[in-house]
Amino acid sequence: MLDDAGELAPKRGPALELALFLGSLVSWVSSRAGQDSTRTNVPCRRRPRAGRCGVEIEAVVDPDSGHILWTCPCCGDNGLIHGWQHTHWDRRDTTDPRFPTRPDRCAPSSPRS
Image: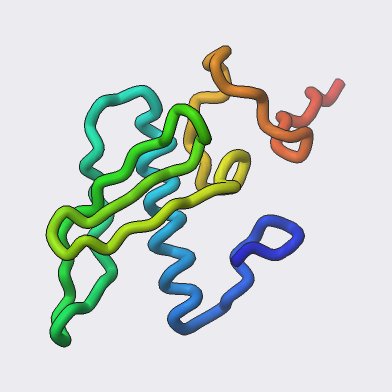
């Protein structure tokens, strides 16, 4: 769903909605790395019986694979997100020695003299 520059490829429609949903999960989970809570503020996207489920998604980073595992505790919708590291939605504290530094494209510019 990302182009070669790491930007969202879909510009409208269901693919964009899915990309925004997954990006929201990545942002929420990665900004809370190491915390025990799995409840996010991201509402479920599923629409069973013509209504929106809307219950907050539960998500966690799998410590072995680094994948984000998510599920809706109400309707059971679930999934796995991989390849999220170093994207625009990755909110980990990169000063934490447990996390590798971001690629050079994210490095701060050198000061001007």
